Length: 344
Ligand SMILES: [Zn+2]
Image 1 (cartoon, protein in one colour):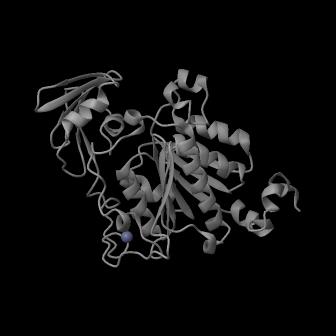
Image 2 (spheres, protein in one colour):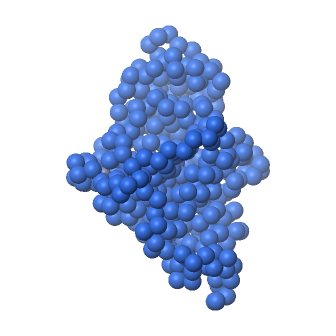
C-alpha cells in the first residue's frame, strides 16, 4: 500500500472501498452548503476520509448555542464571533493536510451557485433552509451531478439521495417549498445533537458510495426517523423514478437557480432596515408563530403584524410573510434572521 494511503488503511480494508476506491476519493471534489450541525459532521468525515477537495459555504457566525452540536467549533470561536466558514477551514486543515479545503463566508444564492460548485462531483445539503435546498436541487440538475438532501429538527431527521434523471428530485418529492412560517426550525423547536449526527452519517455514507462508483449500493427513497421515541419510516424505496411532469428535472425549469424564486432582501434607504419578501406568498399563522417566538425574545402583536425583538434586531412580520427587519442594512444578515425565526 502506498504511504499516502497508510492513514486510510482501515477504510481501504473495507472491500467496497479498497485501494481503487480510496484513489477515487482522493481525486474527488465535494460541494457542501452549510457548516452548521450537519455540515460540521459531514465536513469532518469527508476530510478525515481523504477526499481530494472540499468546497464549503456558510453565511453564519459561531454562537455559543451552536457548540452542543456543531463539532468543528470551540468556545473561543464563539467568543470571538468567528464566521463558521473561517473556523471550519482552520480546524479541518489540522485534521488532514492532504485535503484541499476551500471555504467561503457567504450567503449561498443563485448568482454564485454555479461558479462555486462547477468542479464538484457531488453536492451535499448541510443547510436548514428549504429555499436553499431547491436551489441545490436546481444546481444538481444543471450540473448533472447527484446531491444528498438532509434535514433535522428536534429529535427527527430526514434524508434522500438524489441523482438527476435517475431518481426523483426534490421537486418530484415535494413540488413546492413549505410556506415560510409553517414549520419548526432548530431555533424554535430545538435539536439534539444525535439527530444531526445520524442524518450527517447517512449522507456521508451515500456520498462515499457515489464517489467510489458503487451506485448499486445506494439507499433509495426518502428516509425519515424520529429518535425520541424511536420510529423509522422509509418512503418509496422500490426503484423510485423521477416524475415525468416535474418542472425541475423533466422540463428543466430551474426557477430557483435562474433567480425567479428567491427570498429577496431589499435595503430600505435611511431607515436602518431591510425588507424581506419571501419566495412564496403565504398566510401566516400568527398564533402559532407567537407561541414559537415567546421563548426567543420580546413579542408584540396587534392582529395585523407580529413583532419580535431579539439579537438587537426587531422584525415586523406581516400576514403575507413579508417582514421588515430593523437594526441592520445587511440583506444577508436580515435573511438569516428571517430564516431563523420564520423559516425559509
Ligand atoms: Zn423532479
